[in-house]
Image (cartoon, rainbow, N blue to C red):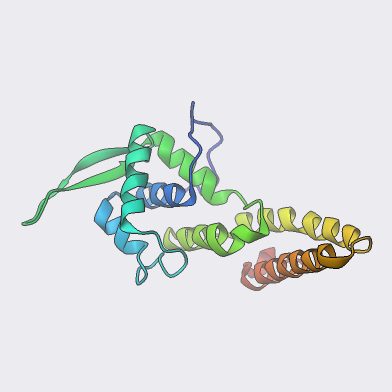
Length: 187
């Protein structure tokens, strides 16, 4: 299976929230109905332990993804209760999800949410996270350097804030070093 992100860009990809990206990525890995996605992202769910998404937000994300043409109804799940529509990612949706899964996050504050979700989704799919982790390191290293250069001239709360940003960015780099596959770790 090709683990490289696709290179073609869909015609008009809307601005998407983290819950929308998560729902799209889940449906690109396996078709499911909204309730099943909501169970994965609930407090006791496989992905909910990383980032919980309320059921209403999951269904709203499904509606937006449908409108954007990134997912399509695939059928209904038979059962005794209400009919549940099963959704799957469209070709554009699958390509967008793969691209998003392999892109590093831009801000240290997104490590706890978006990066961990991407790592969980890649693990679920049996994909190697080495390229994502290397790209994430490439984003974080210059950030640490920029913070270091500004710290010497900062005073008061600015110095405190820069110290916090440096500590969290360095911790994120250490985290990457700990989880990176052995062959891709920095010396």
